[in-house]
Structure formats: C-alpha cells, structure tokens
Image 1 (cartoon, rainbow, N blue to C red):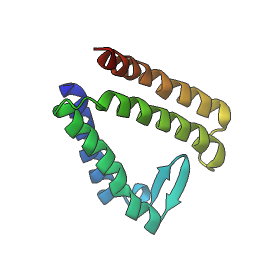
Image 2: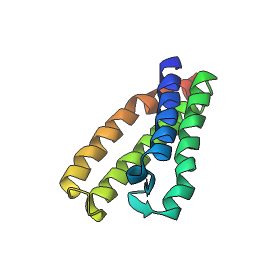
Image 3: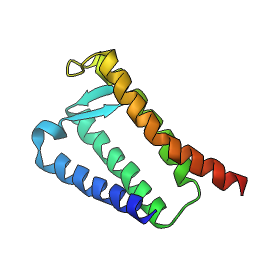
Image 4: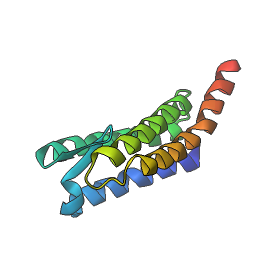
Length: 121
C-alpha cells in the first residue's frame, strides 16, 4: 500500500510540475478519450491532480475502498485509450487502442481480486 501511495504522490507532483512548466502539455487534457484544449484543459488539469492525490491519501491511510477505486479507474483509463486512439489526430487507430486497453485492463485484475478478497472477510 505504501509503494502505491508513493507512486500516486509522485504522479501528482509530476503532473503538477509538467502542467505548470510545459506549455505544449499544459494546453491539452484528455477526458474519456477526448482532448480538451486551451482554457478547458487548464481548468480541468487540477481534477487529474486531485484524483491522484486522493489515491495517494487513500493508499497511505489504507482505505478499504481504494482497491475498487483503482480497478475502476484503470478500466476508465483503458476505455479512454481505446477512444483516444480512434478519435484523436494523434491516435494510431483502434488496434493500438485495443492493445493499450488490454494492458490497463490487465493491470486492474489484481485490484479486483484484492477488493473481492476484502469483501469476503
């Protein structure tokens, strides 16, 4: 749990640093596979920070719901990659999106198992 909390904390710090210092990155946010640009990207970037910061807090404080939340979030990321690969000019088409989606969905499996094991106790 501590390692995953540290990973989320590092991710939060990295995203904040990247979004505040790199204009080419700051001007694009992706939500459910769709790119937001300009002001919309600037206004929604803190939501990504908050999601990762909440994950760090939940892992560090060992909240019971974090395994389920992580599994759901990884499936959301998988779906986002599939959509983005098809709809974005920067995407590489649905076959690449499918590979990426399978990767993130596979990462979710241990979290689903952890959640189910915790519920069974």
